[in-house]
Image 1 (cartoon, rainbow, N blue to C red):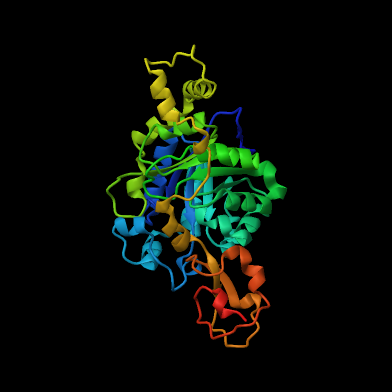
Image 2 (image 1 turned 90 degrees about the vertical axis):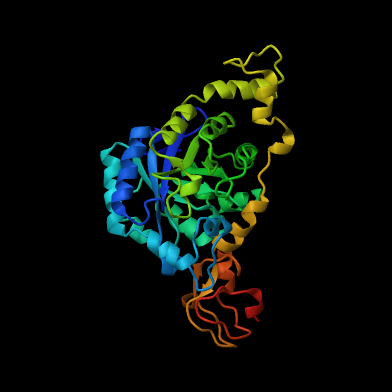
Length: 374
């Protein structure tokens, strides 16, 4: 896989993405400042999120627990406050390219892919909840650009299914292990190996931990794409600031440590092969190396953690009605869209709903559930 002039794979250095996300607080000047700081820190790319609140959130939308913990009270008002326009994002793309780094975007709605394509994004990345959003995954694949798929709050079977939908674009696809908790309670590095073994694709780590050494350890486990949230102030108001690294200092340390992962990779290899003659560097003991890497077959797994369960419900996207649907009415594609939350028939089943008959009245802008259909 390749993004711009950067090769991505097990034989190449890690590709490091500074996730601005919504930590610009809806202010383009702050996004530009974070882009400059990410470039100064040595990132390969910055990433933004492209959404329109009314397209993404149905009237049934809810807050995730971590968003409530960050002081948010209304999911729709939260996102409206954090939107950037397409023109504002164009300025960030230009700034990234001026600074010699790539610009990547997460698009949250199929209807926005065409608009996103008017800008010179170097790659697309999907949010973890969209592992079930087949229409969006396939729409992004059709652009011809490299794709990075994140997998937080998903099972390995769900990851393999999504990769199957994208089988025709495997040569420009990478998959990231992720724990969708903010901050993550633990790294779950074994998921990197599990995903690599199950898919045969370049793997990486979307890192929601609060540490600066996790990127280095993830690389030792085989990750070659790293994504880390950056912020100007971890105490700032917003859903993601507290799970981010301060871009001036902490994130630069993260990048530098990740670039030197080879020492830890040698440690991991020795630990797995029980090489008693190997002596870890820097005075580390053999027991410490084994503890760091948790070399145990039971750790080589991809699973949903308890802290991720509400993210599956709140942030996945369902088939949603675009208007009121009367009992007995045949449901057409025009009557449906895809929005949050994930409490209805999940997005990948959109085509199954088209052509069915409404068993009862369905309100406008709500997730369609099995009980609605005859």
